[in-house]
Image 1: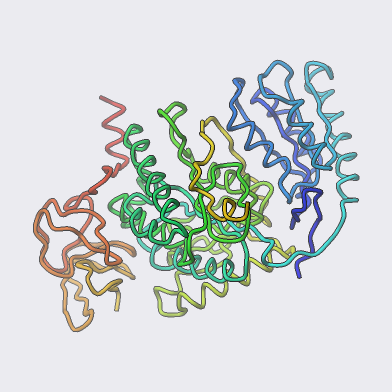
Image 2: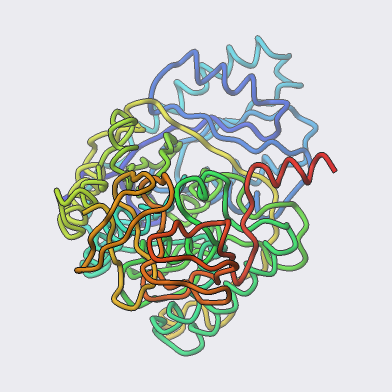
Amino acid sequence: MIPAWQRKDGRKGIRNVVAVCYLVECAHHVARRIVDRIGAPDVQLIGFPGCYPNAYADKVMRAIATHPNLGGMVIVSLGCESFNRAGLAKAVRESGRPVETLVIQEVGGTAATIAEGIEAVERVRAEADRAERTEMAVDELVIGTVCGGSDGTSGITANPAVGRAFDRLVGEGATCLFEETGELVGCEAIMADRAVTPELGEALKESVAKAERYYTVMGFGSFAAGNAEGGLTTQEEKSMGAYSKSGSSPISGIVKPGDVPPAGGLYLLDVVPDGEPRFGFPNISDNAEIVELIACGAHIILFTTGRGSVVGSAISPVIKICANPETARRLAADMDIDAGRILEDAATIEDVGTEIYNRTLAVAKGEHSVSEALGHQEFILTYKSFEPIGPGCLPTRAGAA
Amino acid sequence: MSAILLHPEDNILVITAAVKPGDTLVVDDTSLTVDAAIGVGHKIARRALEPGDKVLKYGAPIGSMTQAAAPGAWVHLHNMKSDYIASTTRDAVEQRTSS
């Protein structure tokens, strides 16, 4: 069993993080100073930079603020920004967690708010430490996967190995999330065949068609220069490799950022905004996707990389699986698992899939992932707009009702 | 062996260790001479490819040829393209922003 923290909504966490959350860029420095002065790995900085309100950002921030890995929160507001700070504080309080709010314009400026903030964090932390302890089973875990810095090895080694780990986790009742519909362009037909209902299959195809329309307006696919340098030539080639992270389980549903899947199984997280493109690229960097996976309840993120990404995340640990044997040697101190061994005939995809599964459980039980131990706590949340998911997207919930 | 065939229907191979021009690879009894210095993860033609041919990897189409390629030739942005969204390189971004 996995030692865990019991939350009042019934979910269980594998970490007990206190987040210091700034609600506009103008409060970022004060919030960062509070976190830096405390200097504890479980006190982490998150935030939103914009002054204008956004329903998506509000929903994702509330989902993060009530995530099972979170034990409490200190909110840092400048005072005049549009973010609904009272609504956020209320959501945290009603979830049974300690929360304090500091408004820089009321407290009396930078130094005063940093000083008060440090005291507020200590109070919140003391209360978070008293949270009820429990145990959790594999079928209560939510695991997300993302790829970043992909190259021509990603789709041959690390991604299919994550797929094997996902198959085992889903088989044992866990909830697994894969994402980035822009990196499924070209895979829509084979993916739709795995849907648990024909309506869901149509919704999966539509989510990819939406991504293709959106990216076409942006003028770029989900394809960076480094992808080409690493041997990938086209969007659909990158997609085929990315798609293999999903494994071979049936697809149980589609969720959008901030929606928590209703039961165990494999889900697609649709990260591409609905409607006319308004706020720019769907995901400006890998951490934007990681934040959305966490907002859907992910306790741990499995991150595959060929070119060599070093990022981690606030709130939920990130496990790094390196696809390329040359990168695995060059960036060895940043990687949890070397899947490049598959290319050098030193391991099979099954072997690496088992390693990923074992590492996932070890990190769930409290072992630090490499990025976590290095202090990586990236977090980015910006503007988007979404409609609620369509009626065919969660057939298991409809069946249960 | 420093190239692999991912699917029996594929018309490309994936390089698994860096190669240089003139290197000969033997994969499934077929001998191929590489025409370029390319790194891990890149593709070479398994057989002669003509403009318009679908490029097959994992048994699935990943784009179309824009130029002919002999067996062993490097297959990349210079001789194939996406059937969906054009790929972008750093140079192309420079041209866009400077124009």
